[in-house]
Amino acid sequence: METQNYKNHTRMHPLYHYVLSVLLLGMLISAVIHAINAMSSGKNVFQAFIILLTAVSVVIIGVLVRTYTLKAQDRAIRAEENLRHYVLTGKMMNPSLTVKQAVALRFASDKELPALSEKAAAENLKPDDIKKLIQDWRADHYRI
Image 1 (cartoon, rainbow, N blue to C red):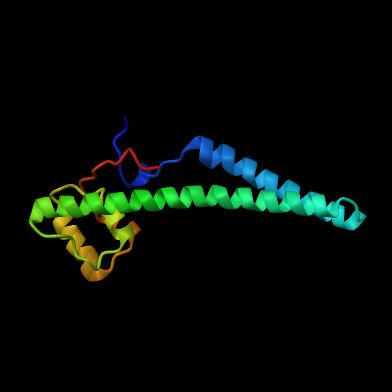
Image 2 (cartoon, rainbow, N blue to C red; image 1 turned 90 degrees about the vertical axis):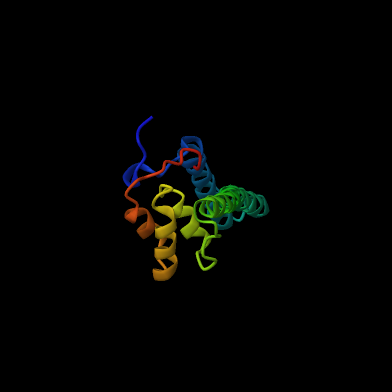
């Protein structure tokens, strides 16, 4: 497995990101076109409306599935990083750190984590800036 770093740490799930996303977009566009055609012809307007509502609902479900999964992962990562910080320093992470900052700190090595977490809290660093400051990258191959 390739060594993970800032440039290659993002992960895509092909079935979700490329297949399902394209299918959902295609379904939504088709439903909109069908609704426009139905309204202009005056035929099957109710059916077209139901199809459009179904397509919008399925797209919303697809987005929520992704959002809820990421939120659950973020909460687990925040708890893991708080525990790791406690093990390394004997104290909890700075409570002013946001979840996104804690998630970004997961890539920092044990040696870098305490100082980088304090710097991130003191300077209110953005998650991307935190990742760019990491010298000794700690890979996370599980999050998608």
